[in-house]
Image (cartoon, rainbow, N blue to C red; front, top):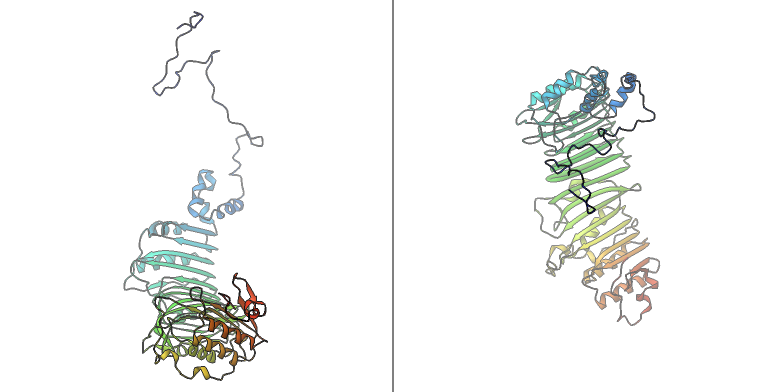
Length: 503
C-alpha cells in the first residue's frame, strides 16, 4: 500500500470476526496493560479481614436492620464468621417463604425469647405459596409460640373448609397481627389459651366470637377486626381504648360498652335486623359508616341508605343519606336501630325526586333535640323529579306546616340546591318560626333550575323579617355576601333578582 507521496506503508492490520482490530501490538512495542483500579486512600493493604473482627453485638445490630432473615443469612458470603448469626437475632422476618421451609428455619432459631417474629407464606403479589390445613396452621403457630415473641405478625394461606382455625397461646406477646387467606371462606377461629399480656390484636379474614376472644385478653387496649360474616359485634371491655371494625358483609348488630374507649372506627353493611347500642363516655375520635340498602325506613316513606357518625372538635356529627323510594314494609325504623349519643350537627342528603321533605326533616329535628347546626343537601335528578300526587305520604302529617315546636339548640342552617317551590318556602318559614335563637342561615339554589320571581321575593321577605339573623346569599358573580349588601336588598322592583343565592 502506498501513500500519495509514493512512500510504501506497512501491511493493513487484519480485523477479527466482530470487526475489532486484531492482536497487533501498539506502536512502540510491549503488551497493552489493563487499567488498575484506583486505591482507596483509607484502605488497608495488609490483607486483614476487618469485617470478621467486628464485635458480635455490632454484627447482630447490622443484621437486624435488614428486616429480612433471608438477607441476613446470605451475608455469610462476607465472612465465614457471620454464618449462622441470623439464628441469634432478636427480630426475625420470614417473608415469601413456603410453610415447609419456614418450619425448618424456625427450628434453627437459637433465641428462646424473640422481640419480633414476622412470618409470611405468600409471595409479594399476595398469592399463597402453599395452602396449610387446619392442623398444619396450628402446628406452625405453635412452633412460633415456643419462640415467645413480644410482637408476632403472621400472614398465612390456608385451605380450611369445615374445621376450626385454632390459635395457640402466646404468653409473652404484647402485639399480634394475624392475616388469613382461605381458599374457601373466612374460617372459624378459636383461641387455645389466654394471652395474659396482649395489648394490641389485629385479626383479618377470620370468623370468631369477639366476646370470647376479649375474655382471653385481660389487658387488651387495641382491637382491629377485618372480615365478614359476623352476626353481631359485641365488645364489652373495661380496658379497650381503640376499636377498629371493617366488616364487608351484612352485620346483625353492634353492642359496644367500653368505658375507656377513646378511638372507634367502624365500617359495615347492615342486615334487616340490624341494631346498634353504643356506650363510650370518653371517646375522642369516632368514625362510623353503615350502609343499609333501604332496609331502614324513616317516617314510613323515606328509605335510609347510609348513616355516618363521626366527631370533630369534641362534637358528634350525624350524616343521613335518604331516598324517596318505597322501603320494605317490614323494615325497621331509624329510632329502633340506633341509640346514638347527643348529636350536635345533622347533615341530611335527601334524594327528593319531587317529593315534600319538610315533615321528615322536622321529625328528625324533634328526635335529635341537641342539634346546633343543620346542613340540608337536596340531591335532585331531573329525569325523576315529578310533582307527587296530592295524597302522597311524603307530606304526612298534613299539618306539618303549622307545627309549633321550639328548637332552642339550633343556631345555624345551611340549605343547598334549593329550588324555591311552594313547600320549600313553607319549610323555610317554619324554620324561622321554630328556631328562636337562629344566628345564621344560608340558602343555595339549584344551579340548573333557578327560583321563580315569586320565590325570590318570598325569600327576601323572610330574610327582611328576621334582621337579627345573619342571612347570606351568593350574588350573580358567585361571591358570597351578606344579604344586607346583596342585590336582594338594593333592588326594589324585584324583577332582576340574583340568579343564585347561597347561605
